[in-house]
Length: 361
Ligand code: IPM
Ligand code: MN
Image (cartoon, rainbow, N blue to C red; front, side, top):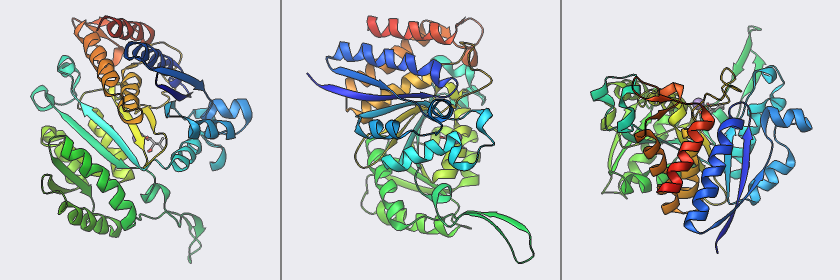
């Protein structure tokens, strides 16, 4: 019998509420599909600062590296916002991403037909949207050097960082994007700011070169400002979107408003080998924490991505996605996607109903 070890890192805020539900879904689907899962819960972020005084404890990192996949909740809590950088919860996220070498960040954005009323766009604009943002994660302006604070010649205080991509960094993320696009609808849109940024100029050149290896993939290039407009105006034109770390961050929150809630969006962060990190795109949501109101669907769909990309258990992934769709068919809605005629439930209840759907399938 196959068996997998999952590092479970709920982290801060609502991560504590949604991750246990995702774990239960994994447990259930493991028994249905006939593989064993063992779960090891580990602290990160504010929770880890309280517990051991650092945002990413040694043990969390070691166990995460040894696992088959990492299921992450959220990292960040207002109380620690003024900590020096090494002691900020968010630093743990960067350390974990770097240590696991997860350079590609997959963020699917799908409009469930049952939820078309939740969109912030016109319904006929949102209907049928099914796109995937592939965001570079360990390079670019978030990670490149030099960066820091200094004083300029006029004695003025300066904060700076570097928008830098190497050919190697562009090629490896572009490779992932082409390989995935070719298995989807064969359309890849690369998003950059090649009219202004040198890193983007190189990015566009390398993507254009790689396109020659993929005659079956239709490639386009958009400037990030135009891409933002087009994601709102006509999102159905997009299949696979390839972009850098900061444009991808911004566009994925923008794109979340197509289905209408960040509480629906899962993500995967993958490297060349070793465990990936699977986490809901919503953060720790301090305002909502402890109220049992948030939507566990993003976390549950992240568990499905863990099964698909982390464990290569496609059938199990499909079962979970089917259960989510089924629970929506049965009319259950958390507050963020609640519309007239549907049943408003809390986080726990939504979780229970997802598990019921899993069992019945
Ligand atoms: C995300 C988040 C993070 C990011 C922050 C918390 C550093 O916004 O995963 O989208 O920008 O990578
Ligand atoms: Mn973000």
